[in-house]
Length: 144
Image (cartoon, rainbow, N blue to C red; front, side, top):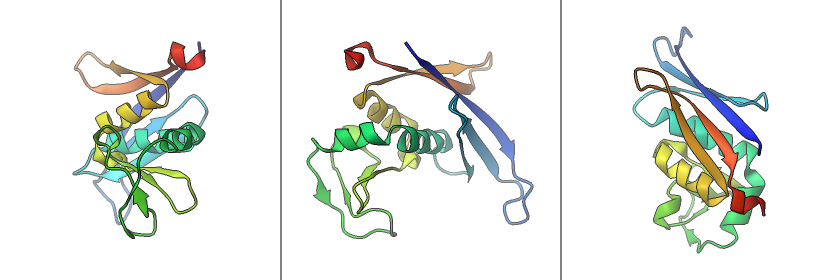
C-alpha cells in the first residue's frame, strides 16, 4: 500500500504587494508543492484541492462522468458547468472536460471528493492540535 504524506507549512509573505499575508504551502512526496496566500477562506482546503486537481485529475474525471450536471452559466473564465450534489460542493467542470476544485469551499468538501475517488485521508497534527499534514492512501476496495 502506497502512503503519500502531504506536509502543511505556514509562513508570512514579505513581498511588496502582499507583505504580511499568510502563506499556506502543501508539499507532496511527488515533489510538487501548492501554495496560496491571503486569508478569510479555507487555505488548507485550497491547497488540498489544488493537490487533488493536479495529481488525481483522471480519477476526478471518472467521477464526474456519473454525476448529474447542471449549467451554472459563465463564471470567470474557469467554469461553465458544475454539480449541485451536496457531497461534491466545490467541484466544477471546465469547458475542456477537466475538473476544477475550489478548495476555498472548505477542507471537508475536498475530503469528501477525495474519498469519492477512492482515497483515504488521515489528519496529522502536532501537540498543540494544529494541522501539520495528511496521510493519503488508496482505499483497499478501490485497489481490487
